Length: 451
Ligand code: GUN
Ligand code: ZN
Image (cartoon, rainbow, N blue to C red):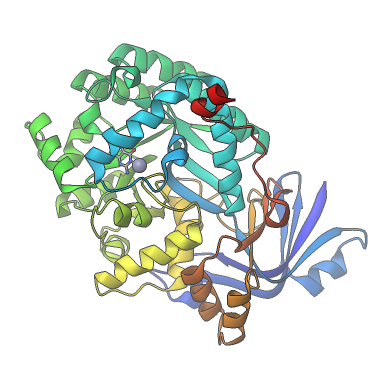
């Protein structure tokens, strides 16, 4: 079915960290995006496009709204939705106390499916249409995720966590079972509809050398698949990696030794990397997922975003929520927190630069920048509508805004839950804030047994 959305269009043609904003930003004050069979077919000024179209074209006119490419979240854990905002710990203790407890529940397919639905509904309600997602070590958690993702027709990347040491027994696989299960999941899901598969070794401390070896080998057997993991998030974690892998030159070198550094490898965090590690990421074409709300919440550190984006050997960086270490599904709120982290480093990052990192820049980090992340003919029709009158305060603030940048920046700093009014996936309206509710019948086991 053919339909169109009308409003103020914003999208990027180039990287605003590297080029003047006039060369990068596409801004159409009264624009239209026409979508057919899941693809954007026309983008441009409303009067001009409407003059060329049949008069019966269905147009959703979103007044006082930005029409943006659907946001892209480069690193997130769906099974951690139920532990967002868990009190009082930093990375390693937080993993043991909360994360590993929650993740053990996902060997139950029905439980995992309901949680995946809730996660995806929250994701879409925040205007995010593509994510790179960690499941748990149990293949059922991956089946559940991809089935739920297919229902919404989303372009998502996901994978089974590989972890054969330093976690509770119920969350461990082995080098062989992890390899076999991942391979079967790749064969079933990678490239089916819009689903893409990512090899997902949790991080170096929770895999043996044997598992790291098998994972690198499997990744090279299936070109086009992804690999996602964590790196240099927390200082104690880095010390632990040094103890476990004394032969490696640095943290990235652990992954490198096992052939896990290359294009389509997405490393979460990368806060405390050495220069030579960053150079190597650049040379290999690997990416960093910057996770500001998580880095603040877990007290991990202040990522050098501007440095990564503007150094001679710049690295592909995309914005990420890292939920449940992260504290919000909203990429607008995440942009606001990234801005504050940069402020603490005495750097200022514009709202346009931040929006780039949640759309086209994130797509580039995921090697999907010819597919999603921009409003351009031929791209997949995933769209987020940001309502500049979403709350009375936002409406009041917008009256005083003097430019598009000012509007975008204030929206990013205030970022109310109601900011995104409508989300389109594959050219279809999939989420409207006004009628938003969870559809999954989700109960924690303790509630079920009490019932
Ligand atoms: N490092 C290893 N596992 C995790 C995780 O689940 N969340 C975060 N933030 N860091 C990790
Ligand atoms: Zn993470």
